[in-house]
Length: 145
Image (tube, one colour):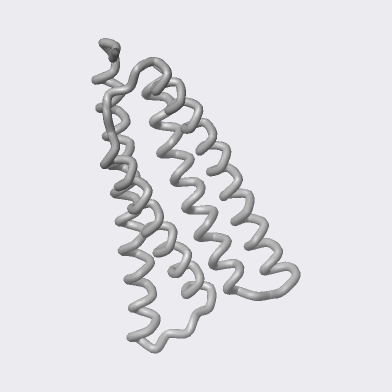
């Protein structure tokens, strides 16, 4: 049994997954482009290299997860909508955790190890976590109306 609002939820979820796919593709493109620029131009920057690796890896993971979720999209009943809402809020908590992890990695990398690779990776993780939080929060606001 599906409810009258199930089609609206399906459209919002599809749009959210499309935004995640676009963010993932942009991340993958920027990460691999930056890595190629570093390799081909004989530029040496541990900070940029680790930033690019993290950005590309997160982008690939986001594409894979969003594509899998998009392939199984369907109308939801009340139980399915509740499960989606709870998963979304769990993801928001994880997004905040990614930001904190990235900050910790960057600060520890700089203060304790003076290793710019850790700083670059940390900055990339903060960026990815923040962007995912923004995308997830936008979706949460849409479906809570």
